[in-house]
Length: 244
Image (cartoon, rainbow, N blue to C red; front, side, top):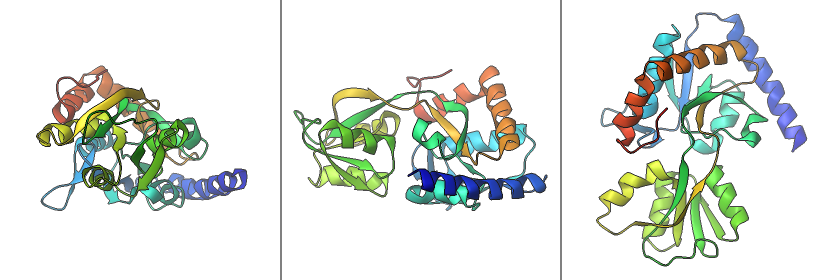
């Protein structure tokens, strides 16, 4: 594991130097495009959602030219490190484990709880079969909880597993699950207790890209200070969402 982290760090250094040498070049913003309302592909085939709004505003405030790149979740960190894009802005929670490999800005989404959703009351989420998306903090939590973990590449597949009986419940960000439960007409419901995980959602960058991180940090600070970030949080997640 240490060798993997060191090798990844070396790749990150090389890619980061390339960015530093190219002042004024386009900053590529990597996202999943499959985790509404954080990020998704709209009817026009474009990346949309809370993080598109936030990212565009951050780039404007930092005076950066940015473009958006879609990447599957399970390879999103390796492809950042190898230089396929310059940031991750994809509902990624800040954790100590991830921070060993990449760097993070301050959070642009405050720490919130994860939650379990099932198709029936009375599910024992500590001993049943629980679905989670691969390489998420929720998957790590389920694996250590005593439940049987089933992992899927996309969040949609985790919900489908509950609907078709392949899993007893799913553990995911509560903000992702709320609209799905509301739209299910009672077919899905919250069960068990909320689970606080992670240190909020931040932008991921290569550890060598300190200058770029500082630009985005300053922009996030200004969005918090003037209320713009709170406005976007409420726009995409509703009046009850956690704000700054």
